[in-house]
Structure formats: C-alpha cells, structure tokens
View 1 (cartoon, rainbow, N blue to C red):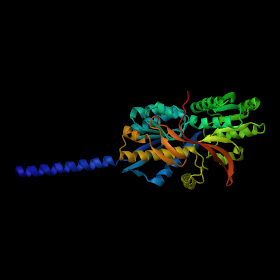
View 2 (view 1 turned 180 degrees about the horizontal axis):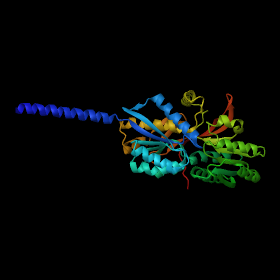
View 3 (view 1 turned 30 degrees about the vertical axis):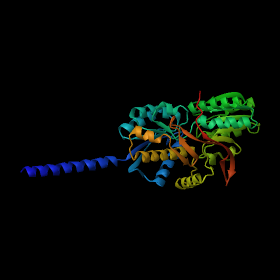
Length: 393
C-alpha cells in the first residue's frame, strides 16, 4: 500500500512539474505588446501615417517574432494636440492592455505627458519623433531613435556663417523644439561672427505666416532661418514665395522638418535651392536607403518615406536588437539596459544610442533641394559625423 501511495505521489508530482513546465513555457512565449501612440488624425496625421507604415514594413521584412517572442503592436491615435489624451492612452495601454513597451510620440508636449507613466510602470518608452533636447531627462526609461532639433540646427548655423550669410532673422514655432532651434542657431551663428536681426516665434498651429514674413521682408536680412514642425513647411514655403522674399534677395535656410520628404511632391518647385540640415533624406545615396525607399514606396502607394518613418523603423530595430540581447526577457530595466549603447547601420547612416544620455548619435547632413528624376529631393552635399545633441542652456 505504501508502495502504491509512493507511486501515486510520484505520478502526481511529475504531473504537477509537467504542468508547471507547460505554464512556464507559455509564460515565456507570451507576446510582447508594444503600445504605439501617434497622431493618425488631426493636423499632424502625416506623422502617424509615416510611423505606422514604417513599423509595418520593418515587421514585414524582419518577421513578427524575435528571440522566441511574438511582437504585437497596439496602435492608438492621440490626435497630436492634447497631452491629456496621450497620457490617458499610455495609462490604458499599460493597465488594461499590459503593454511592455511604449513607442511613438509625435510632438514634445505629448512625450512629456507620457514620461511619468513610463517611469511609474518601469516600461521602456521609445521616442521615435518628438525632438526637444530634454525629453530623455523626463524619464530614465526614455530612449530616443529620432533626433533633436538642437542636433540638426547647429550644423546649418555653422554652414551659414561660413557661406557669406552675415545677417539672419530666425523664425520658429513657439514650443519646445522651436525654442531649442532658435537658441542653438543664435548661439552658433553669432559665435561665428554672424548677426541676428530679429527672432520671431509663431503659434504652433498657425495657418497664416504672412504677417511674420512681412516683418522679415522689411528687416532685409541675408537669410531667413526657419523651423516649423512636419506638415507646416508647405504653407511657409508657399507664403515665402508669394510674399516675394526670394526676389528681394533673402535666402531661406531651414531644418529638414520644413522640407519634409513626405510633403516635397506637394511643395514642388517652391523648395528648389533651399539649403537645410537634417539627419535623413529620401535621396540619401546608401544602398540600405535605396532598398528602404523602394520597399516603402511599393508598400504605401508611392508615399515617400520621411524622417518620422526612419525614427520608427530604427525604433523597431532597437527593440528587436534589445530583445535578442536579453534572450527574449522583457522586464523594463533589462530591456532598457540592452538598448543602451546599441550601434547599427541605419538607412540614414551609422547611429548609436549613447548609453549615458539614451539619446541618438548620428550624422547630420547639409542638403540642397534639387530636381532629381522628375521630383524635388533634398540632395546631401556636406555632413557632420557622429554628432551628439549639443544640449540647450
């Protein structure tokens, strides 16, 4: 009898261990859920469309499983304008949908709103788009794969000073990235001997730039430096042309947001000759980028990829690389640690996640808008390699 009891206990124990093993393997193979928060509607919907398309393309090319984990994307539209909406969506994604990573974030105020949620939940937050320098300082869980406005502004300020531009009016959208761009441009241009005639700021959502441009025309600088967020560039360029500033001999120089690749077909010839600085152009001549542009345009009815698409594509690369490094473990601190210091050849060129700042180090290019194969593209002619965010005092 004792022998029978012992045998029964052995069988029951074996069954318990087996079921525990099955449960453990089920847990190990649970999908990794990513909450992707971007504007799919509203004034910045082009950003969301680019991000969504790039994430889908990356997963189509690299599979939906990495290190034994299926990656599931839960897409949420925050409309791009209300930090409260972004915060609520981040909370719901973590509490209800149990996401283990947050990603996206079209504009700075929205990234700021989600930052404390990431910190509280210990969930990595991949900022693919928003570009104010201080964003990673808002949460130890933030990693950025896009760019910073200061990072892409300093090179154009230095280029202008070296290329016979002696006086400039700066004109920026009045929020975090615009203020960063203004400060860095003024600092670097004046340090190189240039003169700032005036610094103008327009409301973030501003349909009519003509009163500002009238002031620029009256001031008669050698050049106008512009930053407006992606989606607003077409209006600025049209009104710059209509107001006759080019005919008055005023050059237009800008950050690449103004000459967004997604909008270049609609901007057309108004962009020709404009010199800008940015970390990505659809005309970047590397084989990696040529393949990316071809695949992206084929998958998205001839939509041209822009810098937001590249921030998202690289955000997915970073997530996959980190998961491989952790062997599929997705607890926040481990995943975050695996993201720090990652380096790879992006479609934009070589990039690294600075382990100290969790921000991206990359090449910034000086480009000129030119006719290429029947379209207008930003053609790179100079570059600053391994450029870190210079920070803003």
